[in-house]
Length: 236
Image (cartoon, rainbow, N blue to C red; front, top):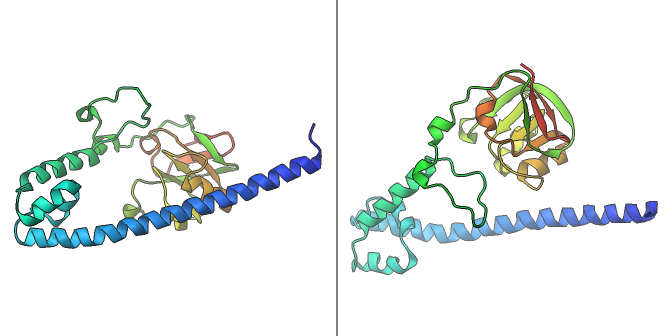
């Protein structure tokens, strides 16, 4: 059996490694976002110029062109306006649908036109009191409070201190909400996801990967969140 000194040393090394990993992960994400932004800026300008001379229906259609097609569009050698519109419509259709929650290598994926539409899938009915939802325990702690369902940060209502934040997923822009929430419940994610990391730092309970939680909980329902067990109980 390992001595207390060995256990303490292992724990210290694990904490140090975790701190370095998460700092590096966020630094890499920041660098990638900045690099992509530098590429997007000239493409936006190019799209605006092409739209002005009617080579594109919309400036943003430039992002549906392949690299090999850009020169042809700029020089006018090829009129790809209609093809780019078709691609734009296909992407719009994808945005309106809910993709499969899990993609496994070798497992056939259902045809895209069979994926449910987000508008229909977002119709929340809530679950009856006593229902227990299972997920991944990502930050320990137990909290009770009313649910505040936030499907989109752009549509967020006031979040009162102590309310349980229920959402699909978070990123750094959600941090101010996490700082006043009593607990966090996310539809997707795991122990290394943004909401989980921030919840542990703030010392609030967090349960991740609760499937279809946006439809199973409505704002105002009282919840009991157990961040260690990974459960969300609907009390009222």
